[in-house]
Length: 428
Image (cartoon, rainbow, N blue to C red; front, side, top):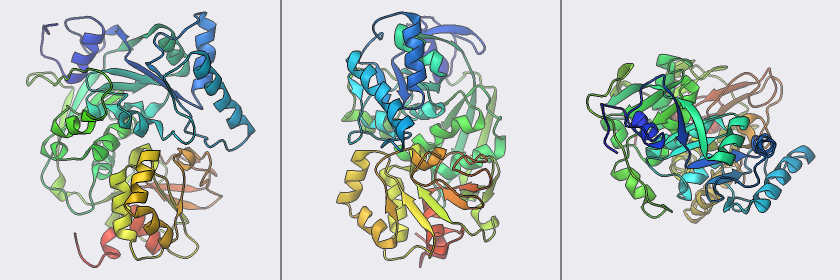
């Protein structure tokens, strides 16, 4: 289909899926869905909505994915009952992609790993961090469980076309600076509502050299700036990632040079050092050197934001041959079973255990205050997760600080938030 006007990558994907030659920001359209996703918290409500519609079968049993990852392995009877609903629905509907404990992983890391999300597709999930898949050049966004139920039934959904914002990153990254630091700095700049219902398009020489792990992290946290979706144009790094994973044909899109953006922001990353978000909002961001000596009780390295193999390698590099601070809890959660297995092969798990860490099976667990690391009153945690709202990880009077894996690992050794250089003998 020939496009009739200059458009951004987000607009092009939505136009194609709405069978239109062009779309404009603010336009309401009905789009064809390539993939519908839900987890053990959101799927039961979506399944209820699906049943109330009155249809017998999902629109495509190969395109509905259920991932029990939030409270799994089941932490109590209610969570076990939630998972049972998913299990029985998947069996009844003969879903191709239901991931049981042992094959499971944190959904937003698992789906790309399994080749279930590809460039140019439209993906909706009953989880706000569904925007992660924009790192592959797909339009992906979170929706409510009722909308997800409708999508499972019809394979279609109404959406409003978002405006697009362009974020250009140039310069050379300093040691220990990753995609997490880029997105934290960006959110710190524009605020938690700075991209409200807009597409955040990340580009520039820095993004072109960023590994997929960093790209997933940036797209994942678009929602923390209020974004409708995060987006990175596919390139050779993308293609290498999906080469051995893709399950079906796909088509890539890119933004036209003269496409319209609501705003364009540029960042010189050579001036950027590791970032930390202070309680209780992701936009309260400071250079780690300016945070002060904040003592912490717990460190969590993992989540759909920073549970990738690259993240674990960074943490292991810092923790190798060292011990965590006395009375501090370091919880490390590989995002998927394959990541866990590879970390085991590379000796990373042994490094973590020798340092005094606890290593968990893949789960969202502590990120949402579910299990595997809930905070007590007055406790402070540093986490590589994506949200630090009051009570997010446990007691309302606990505190959560956000950082990348390098700062998290170094801080676990010191027992306070610190720059990685404080525990490394030399800069790398």
